[in-house]
Amino acid sequence: MELLFLGLGGFVKVLNFHKKKGLFLLCCFPYMFFAASDDTVQNQPINEKSFSNVVAAQSVQLGGQAVNLMGDFFSTIKKIANLLTQPDVLRLEAALVGVTIPYGLGKTFWNRYQISLIEHKFLDTDKTGIVKKPMKVYNWGMEEYPTACGIKNRRNEFRRDFEVAWVHLAIQHDSSLAWHKNVINTVDREISELGSYLKILRTFVFCPSRAYDLIGIDKIFKKSCTRCAIDSKKFHINELTVEQETELDNAMKATLKTTVRHWICLCPNFGKASSLYWEILKRIKRLESIKGVIYSCLDSRKKTQEC
Image (cartoon, rainbow, N blue to C red):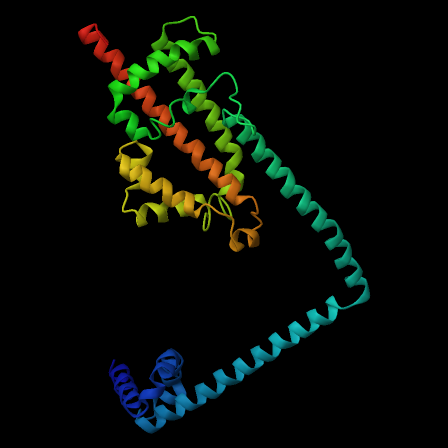
């Protein structure tokens, strides 16, 4: 114990004399302590001079090891460079490049085609603007009721408008049940349909992977929520205000783009896929809100018989 206190006292003195080298001495202290506790050193008086000698010896040893490591490193790099410039290796590299580039381009275009197919099924209008039949519930009333929270806040007004519109939607969907029951069945089917689209798009929107989403849509969503001072959990349970939902939507749309980082991570379709993913996710939240309005209407009808 006395040896330990003497060693610490000497170390503090050395730090006082060598302030600029304090960090280096701190890093070397374990090596110096064990050297000082050796049998050949234990019996000698521990003073500033002997301690400095230990420091110098350990520094020389560490420096020599660092030089050796650097020499081995540069030697290895040189060997790899010489290997890569061999004629046989160059021919192999050219063959790999000749195969990899066409495969990568083909895979990119194929993925983009898959994304376009989902977009075509998701939208109610084609490229010419003609409305496709039948119109989906998740796309009805987007101009007047664009957000899930807006539907909840104006539930009575929305229910009346949607009940009138369902007369036409029911014909399109070949309905034979009461409108409120058919709406719930249709909403459940559409939520399942949109969920299947999201499963396909997840391959393209989580970068570099779903488990480690560093520059993908999940990371962007969390940053957008932080920037807008919004609790992300409230988005998933439809408890945002209309203003918050609109602000978050604008922040997401401004950020969901393909950048250089996505190209480096081999995600060239990120912008298109993530934008579509976000629109589909919002439609699912909208359908959940519609379903909640219908259920609240049914509960109210049971109580008042006039919903």
